[in-house]
Image 1: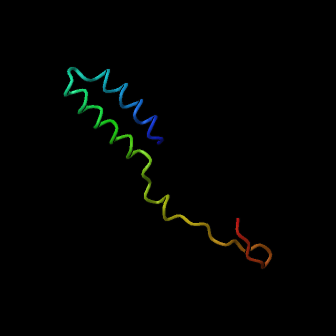
Image 2: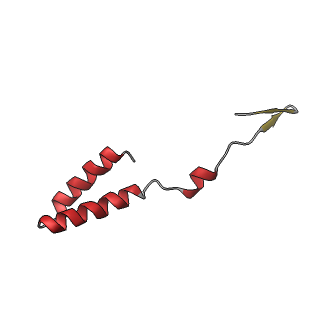
Image 3: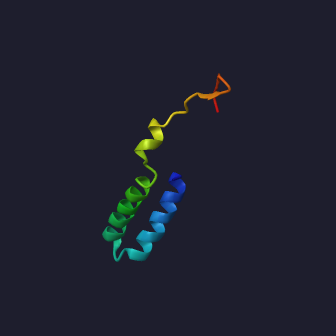
Length: 61
């Protein structure tokens, strides 16, 4: 997720859920960190394209 949108969403959530100054900051940090972990797919980094045999010839997709 884009850092700009993470910050916007975390700020909106912290504003809605936070009661005071300190709790708003803590909630912002928690939401920001959780949104950063949303797109961390460990398989996405290890998947690589493999050559595909078409009529006896190797070609890359």
